Amino acid sequence: MGYLILAVFAGMFLMGFPIVLAILVPSALYIFLNGFPVELIGQRMTYALDSFPLVAVPVFIFVGNLMNQAGVTARIFRFADTLVGRVPGGLAQVNIFSSLIFSGMSGAALADVGGLGKIEVKAMVERGFSRAFSGAVTAASAVVGPIFPPSIPLIIYGSVTGVSIVQLLLAGIIPAIVCVLMLMITTAIIAKRRNLPRAERWSRPAEIRAALMPAIPALLTPVLLVGGMLLGWFTPTEAASVTVFYVIFISAVIYRELTGAHILYAAYETIKSTAAILIIVSAAALFGWILAIEQIPQSFAAALTSVSQDPVMLLLIVNLILLISGMFLDSTTATLLIIPIIAGPLHATGVDPVHLGIVAIFNLMLGLVTPPMGLSLFLITDIAQVSMRAILRAVMPLYIPLLVTLALLTLVPELSLFLPKMIR
Image (cartoon, rainbow, N blue to C red; front, top):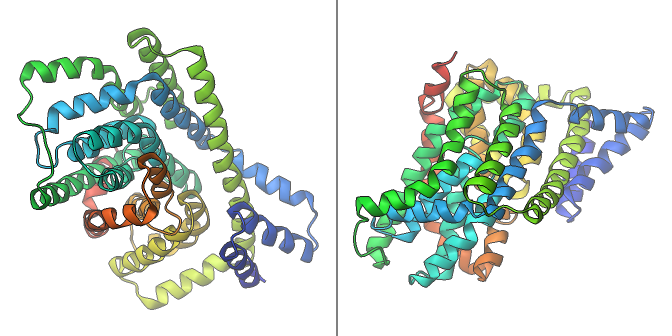
Protein backbone atom coordinates (compact mmCIF):
# COMPACT_ATOMS: atom_id res chain seq x y z
CA MET A 1 0.00 0.00 0.00
CA GLY A 2 2.86 2.38 0.82
CA TYR A 3 4.43 1.97 -2.61
CA LEU A 4 1.00 2.46 -4.23
CA ILE A 5 0.67 5.78 -2.39
CA LEU A 6 4.12 6.83 -3.62
CA ALA A 7 3.15 5.84 -7.18
CA VAL A 8 -0.04 7.92 -7.03
CA PHE A 9 1.93 10.89 -5.70
CA ALA A 10 4.52 10.57 -8.49
CA GLY A 11 1.84 10.17 -11.14
CA MET A 12 -0.14 13.24 -10.02
CA PHE A 13 3.01 15.31 -9.76
CA LEU A 14 4.15 14.38 -13.28
CA MET A 15 0.66 15.15 -14.60
CA GLY A 16 1.04 18.71 -13.36
CA PHE A 17 -1.17 18.72 -10.27
CA PRO A 18 -0.24 21.29 -7.57
CA ILE A 19 2.20 19.72 -5.13
CA VAL A 20 -0.25 20.04 -2.21
CA LEU A 21 -2.90 18.05 -4.07
CA ALA A 22 -0.32 15.49 -5.20
CA ILE A 23 0.46 14.90 -1.52
CA LEU A 24 -3.04 15.16 -0.05
CA VAL A 25 -5.03 13.06 -2.55
CA PRO A 26 -3.04 9.80 -2.08
CA SER A 27 -2.90 10.47 1.67
CA ALA A 28 -6.69 10.85 1.88
CA LEU A 29 -7.08 7.77 -0.32
CA TYR A 30 -4.96 5.77 2.12
CA ILE A 31 -7.04 6.98 5.09
CA PHE A 32 -10.31 5.98 3.40
CA LEU A 33 -9.11 2.59 2.14
CA ASN A 34 -7.79 1.59 5.56
CA GLY A 35 -10.90 2.63 7.45
CA PHE A 36 -9.26 5.36 9.54
CA PRO A 37 -11.58 8.16 10.73
CA VAL A 38 -11.67 11.13 8.36
CA GLU A 39 -10.88 13.46 11.29
CA LEU A 40 -7.40 11.97 11.32
CA ILE A 41 -6.48 14.02 8.23
CA GLY A 42 -7.13 17.32 9.99
CA GLN A 43 -5.58 16.12 13.23
CA ARG A 44 -2.27 15.04 11.68
CA MET A 45 -2.03 18.20 9.57
CA THR A 46 -2.80 20.49 12.50
CA TYR A 47 -0.43 18.60 14.80
CA ALA A 48 2.42 19.20 12.32
CA LEU A 49 1.99 22.96 12.69
CA ASP A 50 2.03 22.79 16.50
CA SER A 51 5.78 23.42 16.46
CA PHE A 52 7.55 26.27 18.24
CA PRO A 53 10.54 26.37 15.82
CA LEU A 54 8.18 26.79 12.84
CA VAL A 55 6.99 30.10 14.30
CA ALA A 56 10.31 31.55 13.11
CA VAL A 57 9.47 30.86 9.46
CA PRO A 58 6.77 33.52 8.90
CA VAL A 59 8.62 35.99 11.10
CA PHE A 60 11.85 35.78 9.08
CA ILE A 61 9.81 36.04 5.86
CA PHE A 62 8.34 39.23 7.34
CA VAL A 63 11.86 40.53 8.02
CA GLY A 64 12.86 40.05 4.38
CA ASN A 65 9.72 41.78 3.13
CA LEU A 66 10.21 44.69 5.52
CA MET A 67 13.75 45.28 4.31
CA ASN A 68 12.65 45.26 0.69
CA GLN A 69 10.05 47.90 1.52
CA ALA A 70 12.31 50.09 3.65
CA GLY A 71 15.22 50.68 1.28
CA VAL A 72 17.71 48.58 3.26
CA THR A 73 18.66 46.62 0.14
CA ALA A 74 19.82 49.73 -1.73
CA ARG A 75 22.21 50.68 1.10
CA ILE A 76 23.64 47.16 1.19
CA PHE A 77 24.25 47.28 -2.56
CA ARG A 78 25.98 50.68 -2.42
CA PHE A 79 28.30 49.50 0.37
CA ALA A 80 29.19 46.31 -1.52
CA ASP A 81 29.92 48.37 -4.63
CA THR A 82 32.50 50.49 -2.83
CA LEU A 83 34.27 47.36 -1.53
CA VAL A 84 34.46 45.04 -4.54
CA GLY A 85 33.38 47.13 -7.54
CA ARG A 86 36.97 47.25 -8.82
CA VAL A 87 37.46 43.45 -8.69
CA PRO A 88 37.37 41.80 -12.16
CA GLY A 89 33.70 41.41 -12.89
CA GLY A 90 32.76 44.69 -11.23
CA LEU A 91 29.07 44.79 -10.42
CA ALA A 92 28.80 41.03 -10.91
CA GLN A 93 31.10 40.67 -7.89
CA VAL A 94 29.08 43.30 -6.04
CA ASN A 95 25.98 41.24 -6.81
CA ILE A 96 27.49 38.12 -5.23
CA PHE A 97 28.90 39.94 -2.20
CA SER A 98 25.58 41.71 -1.61
CA SER A 99 23.81 38.36 -1.49
CA LEU A 100 26.01 37.29 1.42
CA ILE A 101 25.21 40.48 3.35
CA PHE A 102 21.48 40.38 2.56
CA SER A 103 21.25 36.69 3.49
CA GLY A 104 22.21 37.65 7.02
CA MET A 105 18.79 39.26 7.34
CA SER A 106 16.30 37.55 5.03
CA GLY A 107 17.08 33.80 5.31
CA ALA A 108 15.49 33.03 1.94
CA ALA A 109 16.79 32.86 -1.62
CA LEU A 110 13.66 34.24 -3.26
CA ALA A 111 13.74 37.26 -0.93
CA ASP A 112 17.26 37.93 -2.20
CA VAL A 113 16.23 37.58 -5.86
CA GLY A 114 13.07 39.63 -5.43
CA GLY A 115 14.62 42.32 -3.22
CA LEU A 116 18.20 42.87 -4.31
CA GLY A 117 17.63 41.44 -7.78
CA LYS A 118 15.73 44.43 -9.11
CA ILE A 119 18.47 46.82 -7.98
CA GLU A 120 21.33 44.57 -9.10
CA VAL A 121 20.04 43.77 -12.59
CA LYS A 122 19.18 47.42 -13.30
CA ALA A 123 22.62 48.62 -12.15
CA MET A 124 24.49 45.90 -14.07
CA VAL A 125 22.61 46.57 -17.32
CA GLU A 126 23.36 50.29 -17.00
CA ARG A 127 27.08 49.45 -16.61
CA GLY A 128 27.11 47.39 -19.82
CA PHE A 129 26.37 43.83 -18.65
CA SER A 130 23.88 41.73 -20.61
CA ARG A 131 20.47 41.17 -19.04
CA ALA A 132 20.93 37.40 -19.21
CA PHE A 133 24.28 37.41 -17.40
CA SER A 134 22.99 39.90 -14.81
CA GLY A 135 20.03 37.65 -14.09
CA ALA A 136 22.18 34.51 -14.00
CA VAL A 137 24.57 35.95 -11.40
CA THR A 138 21.65 37.16 -9.30
CA ALA A 139 19.95 33.75 -9.30
CA ALA A 140 23.16 31.78 -8.64
CA SER A 141 24.35 34.00 -5.79
CA ALA A 142 20.94 33.79 -4.10
CA VAL A 143 21.74 30.15 -3.27
CA VAL A 144 23.84 31.55 -0.42
CA GLY A 145 20.78 33.04 1.32
CA PRO A 146 19.28 29.83 2.74
CA ILE A 147 22.65 28.69 4.14
CA PHE A 148 23.88 31.76 6.02
CA PRO A 149 21.96 32.48 9.26
CA PRO A 150 19.10 33.13 9.57
CA SER A 151 18.04 30.29 7.29
CA ILE A 152 14.39 29.33 6.88
CA PRO A 153 15.23 25.94 5.25
CA LEU A 154 17.62 25.07 8.09
CA ILE A 155 14.95 25.95 10.65
CA ILE A 156 12.51 23.62 8.86
CA TYR A 157 15.21 20.92 8.70
CA GLY A 158 15.85 21.26 12.43
CA SER A 159 12.15 21.06 13.25
CA VAL A 160 11.80 17.87 11.17
CA THR A 161 14.89 16.06 12.45
CA GLY A 162 15.19 17.39 16.01
CA VAL A 163 18.71 18.68 15.34
CA SER A 164 19.75 21.83 17.24
CA ILE A 165 18.74 24.83 15.14
CA VAL A 166 21.42 27.00 16.75
CA GLN A 167 24.11 24.52 15.66
CA LEU A 168 22.63 24.32 12.17
CA LEU A 169 22.64 28.11 11.82
CA LEU A 170 26.25 28.33 13.01
CA ALA A 171 27.22 25.49 10.67
CA GLY A 172 26.02 27.48 7.67
CA ILE A 173 28.38 30.45 8.12
CA ILE A 174 31.61 28.97 6.69
CA PRO A 175 29.87 27.07 3.83
CA ALA A 176 28.14 30.30 2.75
CA ILE A 177 31.47 32.14 2.67
CA VAL A 178 33.07 29.26 0.72
CA CYS A 179 30.23 29.39 -1.82
CA VAL A 180 30.63 33.16 -2.24
CA LEU A 181 34.39 32.80 -2.79
CA MET A 182 33.86 30.08 -5.40
CA LEU A 183 31.32 32.21 -7.25
CA MET A 184 33.56 35.29 -7.11
CA ILE A 185 36.59 33.36 -8.42
CA THR A 186 34.56 31.94 -11.29
CA THR A 187 33.07 35.33 -12.09
CA ALA A 188 36.55 36.89 -12.14
CA ILE A 189 37.69 34.26 -14.65
CA ILE A 190 34.63 34.89 -16.83
CA ALA A 191 35.19 38.64 -16.56
CA LYS A 192 38.81 38.34 -17.72
CA ARG A 193 37.82 36.22 -20.71
CA ARG A 194 34.89 38.41 -21.76
CA ASN A 195 36.46 41.74 -20.75
CA LEU A 196 33.46 42.62 -18.61
CA PRO A 197 33.24 46.18 -17.21
CA ARG A 198 34.35 47.11 -13.71
CA ALA A 199 34.92 50.23 -11.65
CA GLU A 200 37.69 52.47 -13.00
CA ARG A 201 39.47 52.68 -9.64
CA TRP A 202 39.39 51.34 -6.09
CA SER A 203 37.21 53.29 -3.71
CA ARG A 204 38.99 55.72 -1.42
CA PRO A 205 38.76 55.15 2.37
CA ALA A 206 36.50 58.19 2.68
CA GLU A 207 34.13 56.74 0.07
CA ILE A 208 34.04 53.38 1.83
CA ARG A 209 33.28 55.10 5.14
CA ALA A 210 30.53 57.15 3.52
CA ALA A 211 28.86 53.99 2.17
CA LEU A 212 29.52 51.99 5.34
CA MET A 213 27.86 54.35 7.81
CA PRO A 214 24.31 54.03 6.39
CA ALA A 215 24.78 50.28 6.02
CA ILE A 216 26.07 49.61 9.56
CA PRO A 217 22.61 49.15 11.18
CA ALA A 218 21.71 46.59 8.51
CA LEU A 219 25.11 44.85 8.76
CA LEU A 220 24.65 44.46 12.53
CA THR A 221 21.51 42.34 12.05
CA PRO A 222 23.26 38.94 11.71
CA VAL A 223 25.64 39.89 14.53
CA LEU A 224 22.68 40.60 16.81
CA LEU A 225 20.99 37.40 15.69
CA VAL A 226 23.88 34.95 16.08
CA GLY A 227 25.39 36.70 19.09
CA GLY A 228 22.09 36.74 20.96
CA MET A 229 21.57 33.02 20.41
CA LEU A 230 25.12 32.13 21.46
CA LEU A 231 24.83 34.23 24.61
CA GLY A 232 21.53 32.57 25.45
CA TRP A 233 19.52 35.78 25.27
CA PHE A 234 16.93 34.19 23.02
CA THR A 235 16.11 31.05 21.06
CA PRO A 236 16.16 30.97 17.23
CA THR A 237 12.39 31.47 17.24
CA GLU A 238 12.60 34.42 19.63
CA ALA A 239 15.50 35.76 17.56
CA ALA A 240 13.14 36.13 14.62
CA SER A 241 10.87 38.43 16.61
CA VAL A 242 13.83 40.42 17.93
CA THR A 243 15.02 40.87 14.35
CA VAL A 244 11.59 42.19 13.28
CA PHE A 245 11.63 44.87 15.99
CA TYR A 246 15.23 45.75 15.12
CA VAL A 247 14.51 46.08 11.39
CA ILE A 248 11.41 48.19 12.07
CA PHE A 249 13.47 50.41 14.39
CA ILE A 250 16.34 51.03 11.96
CA SER A 251 13.95 51.46 9.02
CA ALA A 252 11.56 53.85 10.76
CA VAL A 253 13.88 55.73 13.13
CA ILE A 254 17.34 55.64 11.52
CA TYR A 255 16.57 55.40 7.79
CA ARG A 256 13.13 57.05 8.16
CA GLU A 257 11.75 55.32 5.07
CA LEU A 258 9.34 52.80 6.59
CA THR A 259 5.66 53.78 6.59
CA GLY A 260 2.47 52.12 7.74
CA ALA A 261 1.66 51.24 4.14
CA HIS A 262 5.03 49.49 3.82
CA ILE A 263 4.35 47.41 6.93
CA LEU A 264 0.89 46.42 5.70
CA TYR A 265 2.24 45.40 2.30
CA ALA A 266 5.08 43.40 3.91
CA ALA A 267 2.53 41.67 6.16
CA TYR A 268 0.34 40.85 3.14
CA GLU A 269 3.27 39.34 1.23
CA THR A 270 4.30 37.40 4.34
CA ILE A 271 0.84 35.89 4.75
CA LYS A 272 0.87 34.71 1.13
CA SER A 273 4.35 33.16 1.40
CA THR A 274 3.69 31.60 4.81
CA ALA A 275 0.43 30.04 3.69
CA ALA A 276 2.16 28.44 0.72
CA ILE A 277 4.92 27.00 2.90
CA LEU A 278 2.91 25.82 5.89
CA ILE A 279 0.18 24.07 3.90
CA ILE A 280 2.96 21.99 2.34
CA VAL A 281 4.43 21.37 5.81
CA SER A 282 1.11 20.08 7.14
CA ALA A 283 0.33 17.97 4.07
CA ALA A 284 3.82 16.47 4.03
CA ALA A 285 3.50 15.58 7.72
CA LEU A 286 0.38 13.52 6.97
CA PHE A 287 2.14 11.89 4.03
CA GLY A 288 5.21 11.16 6.15
CA TRP A 289 3.06 9.61 8.88
CA ILE A 290 1.55 7.23 6.32
CA LEU A 291 4.98 6.30 4.98
CA ALA A 292 6.12 5.59 8.53
CA ILE A 293 3.14 3.27 9.11
CA GLU A 294 4.02 1.42 5.91
CA GLN A 295 7.69 1.30 7.01
CA ILE A 296 8.92 2.89 3.80
CA PRO A 297 11.79 4.70 5.61
CA GLN A 298 12.96 1.39 7.09
CA SER A 299 12.84 -0.28 3.68
CA PHE A 300 14.78 2.57 2.10
CA ALA A 301 17.33 2.53 4.92
CA ALA A 302 17.88 -1.20 4.46
CA ALA A 303 18.31 -0.76 0.71
CA LEU A 304 20.70 2.17 1.16
CA THR A 305 22.91 0.47 3.75
CA SER A 306 23.00 -2.72 1.67
CA VAL A 307 24.77 -0.72 -1.05
CA SER A 308 27.51 0.53 1.27
CA GLN A 309 28.34 1.21 4.91
CA ASP A 310 30.85 3.91 4.01
CA PRO A 311 29.56 7.34 5.15
CA VAL A 312 31.19 9.16 2.23
CA MET A 313 29.71 6.78 -0.34
CA LEU A 314 26.27 7.09 1.26
CA LEU A 315 26.55 10.89 1.23
CA LEU A 316 27.41 10.80 -2.47
CA ILE A 317 24.39 8.58 -3.17
CA VAL A 318 22.14 10.86 -1.13
CA ASN A 319 23.55 13.91 -2.96
CA LEU A 320 22.51 12.37 -6.27
CA ILE A 321 19.02 11.64 -4.90
CA LEU A 322 18.64 15.18 -3.58
CA LEU A 323 19.99 16.81 -6.75
CA ILE A 324 17.41 14.97 -8.84
CA SER A 325 14.65 15.65 -6.29
CA GLY A 326 15.53 19.33 -6.14
CA MET A 327 14.97 19.64 -9.87
CA PHE A 328 11.33 18.67 -9.46
CA LEU A 329 10.34 19.48 -5.85
CA ASP A 330 10.62 22.77 -3.99
CA SER A 331 13.07 22.66 -1.08
CA THR A 332 10.40 22.64 1.64
CA THR A 333 8.57 19.66 0.15
CA ALA A 334 11.80 17.76 -0.48
CA THR A 335 13.01 18.44 3.06
CA LEU A 336 9.77 17.21 4.61
CA LEU A 337 9.39 14.13 2.41
CA ILE A 338 12.96 12.94 1.83
CA ILE A 339 15.03 14.02 4.85
CA PRO A 340 13.15 11.86 7.42
CA ILE A 341 13.80 8.85 5.17
CA ILE A 342 17.52 9.38 4.56
CA ALA A 343 18.54 10.81 7.94
CA GLY A 344 18.29 7.53 9.88
CA PRO A 345 20.65 5.34 7.83
CA LEU A 346 23.23 8.11 7.43
CA HIS A 347 23.27 8.88 11.15
CA ALA A 348 23.68 5.14 11.85
CA THR A 349 26.80 4.99 9.69
CA GLY A 350 28.41 7.94 11.47
CA VAL A 351 27.40 11.00 9.42
CA ASP A 352 27.01 13.96 11.77
CA PRO A 353 23.38 15.21 11.69
CA VAL A 354 24.52 18.86 11.49
CA HIS A 355 26.88 18.06 8.60
CA LEU A 356 24.08 16.20 6.82
CA GLY A 357 21.77 19.18 7.33
CA ILE A 358 24.13 21.62 5.63
CA VAL A 359 24.91 19.25 2.74
CA ALA A 360 21.23 18.40 2.20
CA ILE A 361 19.91 21.97 2.34
CA PHE A 362 22.66 23.38 0.12
CA ASN A 363 22.02 20.55 -2.32
CA LEU A 364 18.29 21.27 -2.42
CA MET A 365 18.98 24.99 -2.88
CA LEU A 366 20.65 24.15 -6.18
CA GLY A 367 17.16 23.18 -7.33
CA LEU A 368 16.29 26.88 -7.28
CA VAL A 369 18.61 27.40 -10.27
CA THR A 370 18.05 24.12 -12.12
CA PRO A 371 15.20 23.41 -14.54
CA PRO A 372 12.41 22.45 -14.77
CA MET A 373 11.23 23.75 -11.35
CA GLY A 374 13.88 26.38 -10.57
CA LEU A 375 11.88 29.08 -8.79
CA SER A 376 14.77 31.56 -8.80
CA LEU A 377 15.07 31.13 -12.57
CA PHE A 378 11.38 31.86 -13.10
CA LEU A 379 11.53 34.94 -10.86
CA ILE A 380 14.69 36.34 -12.43
CA THR A 381 13.38 35.95 -15.99
CA ASP A 382 10.57 38.32 -15.01
CA ILE A 383 12.91 40.77 -13.27
CA ALA A 384 15.58 40.76 -16.00
CA GLN A 385 12.98 40.55 -18.79
CA VAL A 386 14.77 37.81 -20.70
CA SER A 387 13.79 34.32 -21.84
CA MET A 388 14.38 31.18 -19.80
CA ARG A 389 16.66 29.88 -22.56
CA ALA A 390 18.88 32.97 -22.31
CA ILE A 391 19.10 32.69 -18.52
CA LEU A 392 19.99 28.99 -18.71
CA ARG A 393 22.78 29.65 -21.20
CA ALA A 394 24.18 32.40 -18.98
CA VAL A 395 23.96 30.41 -15.75
CA MET A 396 25.70 27.27 -17.08
CA PRO A 397 29.28 28.35 -16.09
CA LEU A 398 28.04 29.20 -12.58
CA TYR A 399 26.93 25.62 -11.94
CA ILE A 400 30.63 24.75 -11.66
CA PRO A 401 31.40 26.75 -8.45
CA LEU A 402 28.09 25.64 -6.93
CA LEU A 403 28.85 21.96 -7.54
CA VAL A 404 32.45 22.41 -6.34
CA THR A 405 31.08 23.94 -3.12
CA LEU A 406 28.71 20.98 -2.71
CA ALA A 407 31.63 18.57 -3.16
CA LEU A 408 33.74 20.44 -0.58
CA LEU A 409 30.90 20.47 1.95
CA THR A 410 30.34 16.74 1.42
CA LEU A 411 33.98 15.66 1.62
CA VAL A 412 35.22 18.13 4.26
CA PRO A 413 32.81 17.93 7.23
CA GLU A 414 34.86 20.41 9.26
CA LEU A 415 33.69 23.24 7.00
CA SER A 416 30.25 22.71 8.54
CA LEU A 417 31.22 21.42 11.98
CA PHE A 418 34.03 23.77 13.02
CA LEU A 419 31.81 26.49 14.51
CA PRO A 420 29.12 24.19 16.03
CA LYS A 421 31.83 22.18 17.83
CA MET A 422 32.87 25.34 19.64
CA ILE A 423 29.55 25.44 21.54
CA ARG A 424 28.99 21.71 22.06
